[in-house]
Length: 187
Image 1: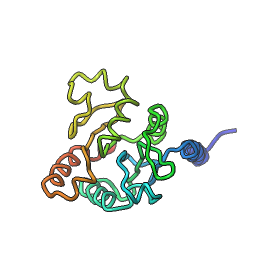
Image 2: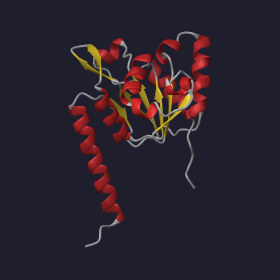
Image 3: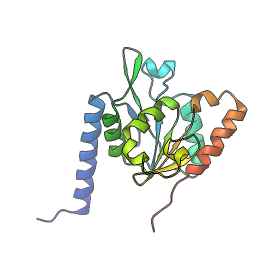
Image 4: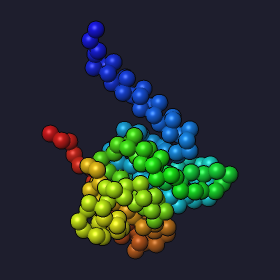
């Protein structure tokens, strides 16, 4: 019996939903469109997020949505992944293997790492992929540089949420974000 294209798509969606539920059950926090071409990774959660608010639901999330829209991502192209797990109001870094499993499940074309806590988790989770990058600064995920990591573009911002209160830092973050615009269609 042949499987239709619709049935195949539905099976992929069900498998992805099951995988994401499994990750959430193991302490991974993610919000947004799991099929988005870009994922924002946050490690320094604010007080509201530590208390249970949705990841990137505050001013930092609004600023990111606005910035992504300005560089060509669609409004639905928004997915956030926490590099930490929260238990009883305290954050601790995700296990690097679990973090990598979560990011690979989302499989974005671009990753925007929002702070140094998240960058540390990414460095540990993708150490094997980073050591093959020839440029040392890029391999160390220096802020503002686009690193090619396993077929996707990855960039670290050094404290996006904190930068929102300083106009000069905000401009610097904007100049970095513009470097990771949509890749466009492959045809």
